[in-house]
Image 1 (cartoon, chains in turn orange, green):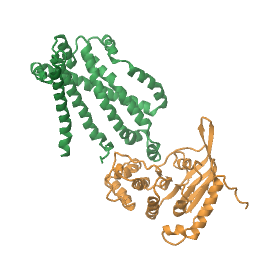
Image 2 (cartoon, rainbow over the protein chains, first blue to last red):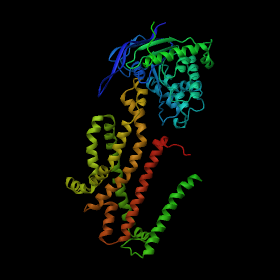
Image 3 (tube, each protein chain N blue to C red):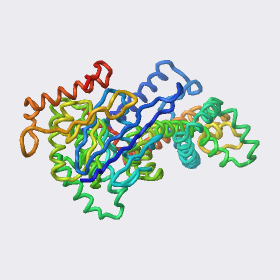
Length: 265
Length: 254
């Protein structure tokens, strides 16, 4: 299996009035094709910077970002993005919002085909019947569902999510986790999920990457061995296997925060 | 029922206002050179109806022309200020300073600059007085666009023009129309300023002036009411446009 995302020795600093603020330092990580990588780390450790680098919205000071064997130097059409703030174009219906990326990426695609593609996704996330509503009539959870549809409507290789479920209540969040699994079962994409929620990272991720505190570097990578076979069940989170994984991650986060010294090997 | 209410309430308010006005004049026993009463006005309209029609048309077209210039120039200036920080920093003090100048003082300046060009001067004044709110709100609307909006399209490799047309422009429309409503009334003030102050004015402002010269006080009041009516008509024309182009911004009530 090839690595779809390769980040090699990336160092990046923001220029501020008080001098450079390093956020990433010699960060290296890779995500194999089709895998779901969850990235966790202390607040302000540069996780969002990571998403912008992978999306090609920013160039790293040093180091390289590779997607599909090509060096990322500028934005590319094969990426989909979803943010914590699921901004919708309020003047468009939900369906037209989901279609938006197709207008940019595939301007020649017939209108009917665009609509069919968007409807297919809206049905998958449980928004069928709401496609002609305006975003202002939607709850936060519904907006985020629509935002996910918009992020993958153009069949990107990579879906980049920056805390998409962070602003939702716990129950809505769990609903959306399951929606995420449903989408993955239908759509082959490689995903990078930035999150603060360890349970989320274990439930959704094939691997969980723990970043150290700022400037961030890859501190720990865990291969998730989710209990049970077949589609992941939420119940699995309450098994001893998951408890062990969560405890390990929690410990790593505390090390990243500098509150606990790493154990001697 | 709801629709009927939407019309009846404002009409009722106007009727009540007219009655109160009549009552005020009657109770104080004011002669018409202190304040004309609404019942004096029909006669003024009857005698001078052709002057009213001509004057209204002249005032209206020059106001609309000035307003259109203000929309074009104000939007352009707003775009420059919205997209460039340097332009914003450079232009804001200039604009605020210009806006603070009482426009009446500019009438003689314009009259000397473009001697005899009364129509041009009037349109120019309507424009000068009304572009400021448009420029400021378009500028603010564009500069406060949430970065996520841009990133959605930028991450797909969309050009700046595409981002502007698909997102920035429609997103700014509600602010634009809000400003346009202010500009409508301002443009009327600009037009009338020139019409009244210029020695060879035209339009309703000139009619007002002739009422003053001939001590025809009901005529002066009749002009004011005609101006108010024109203002209301143009304002609601803008509201109608807003409903068409930015109706999405109106949240359902309740």
